[in-house]
Image (cartoon, rainbow, N blue to C red; front, side, top):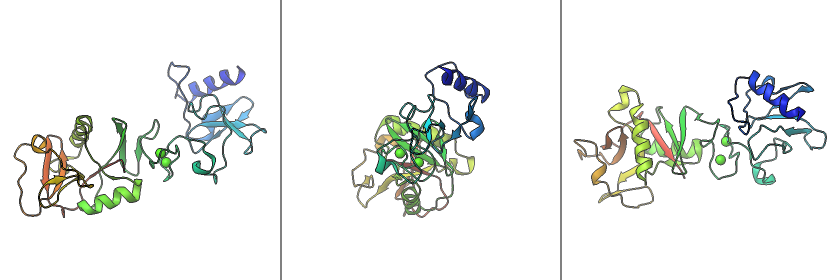
Length: 242
Ligand SMILES: [Ca+2]
Ligand SMILES: [Ca+2]
């Protein structure tokens, strides 16, 4: 109980506390983990640990770490999730911390990463990156390199609605175009990267598609999809599950 009271005090002091006792507490620096018995450590996972000689690393997560970490010994940094099987909280660090096969995806406390806004819709991760990724092919490569992901495949109404909502927040300069996604014209039909044909007729933005020569890649705007020039450069990119 002593540790519990101390952690509540620390959480309140750090301003990160709301009214639910079962809520976890995230730290940014060691000072957020202040304990009356000594100072705690803010681990790379974003949760506090405290000295415990029974742990190999000498540190054990406090009660207010994420549910799967609370009370668990901290694992040495050079031991990956794969080797220990111990899940961690996903963080923007180029590592699949929680062992779900996705790298740097959305998690509570991991809402932005490398200039991208992270979200999850229908259990699918989205990385909305309002940055100059390049052409459609560059964008696909970029999703892979940054997040071991690929251009987003918007299979459900919920995913399409989320993409439109994200596109509505884009700067005016790109608002007329939108995000690159996985869809493109394969020479005879519109299809996702894996070749699955898209039932696209109801998805076009007003006035689209224009079908000018070379407009074979899809951009998602706030009001629907448009056919864009695959070689258009410097456009934002929406990455999705690999
Ligand atoms: Ca992960
Ligand atoms: Ca990570």
